[in-house]
Length: 433
Image (cartoon, rainbow, N blue to C red; front, side, top):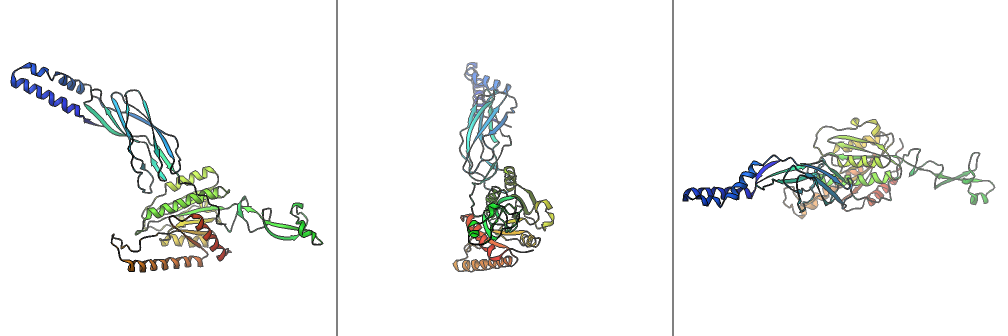
């Protein structure tokens, strides 16, 4: 808290000095009597001054809202003496991923009578996803006679994790390998299920419920229907956090995180075990799990994902064995700009994992030269063609390794990208290892 003078102190000081000088110059004490109230106010206010240390607590109505939700924030502030004036500062991002702060709003300042704790409640809309701190309050304590004031910022850490709006995904990519637990993915094996697979003659141990009476009626023996059972799988979200210069890395990374949110929520809803691996400047992971608490762990990890420029080699040997179960279904989210991440994808395929890639397309202005000047339509068209050719060559290279790649850009529904991935996987076929 910093001590500052108010306008009243300056007025009292000027009038007191003016009255004293005028009384001495004119030789009349009655002149000084005119400014006696201001002199008394000045002396009393300076004598009673003391250091102010107000206290504050912040409570919020919801710590995990969705984008466009409104949060009720209650501030309880108390000071020893004086009149308190408090105003709430704009939201400040606290996550490592640098994002633009929420635009400030004019929130009416709340005046507190002082000494006794008083509450003030206000509303703050959540405009964008991320981790923010709403516990910073600008406080001004005006002392009883109004000559001095103490100003400062009180901080009661109150992190708010704003989740992106949920996306309904209906066409999930089917994995090649599944676990022996009930889920929503069709297994290539036969057993008890819903999807029809084949017919075979009735044998000892077969259930009477599996007899196909329509086929058996046209034959001289009993036939049973075979079906594909629905199974669950281990899903690992592989996030590319390598920093590549020359592109809007924050926009690209935000696109990948939004896709990771939607994929994690969709796969957890069908009993899949979902984990997270961040491969980039830092190497972090969340061990696959199920349930609502696993979704919260994944959300916290995604909101805390960092972008650090690092030239060191980051390979898969740094990742724990539990983070990548055998034959996992790996959903890689990357702009495919860093060779280290591409080599990691190829290595995962060689280890026997089922890998698909969602390419967060780094769409840039082809007519820009990088310094703000336009390079002209001709140069821009040529640059765009060269860029598209390089991306196509990279996708073909990954396809030869059995990796299906589908583009996703801002404004495109994620459902379209997932359907494109499914079509490419059917053309490539399962990789038998």
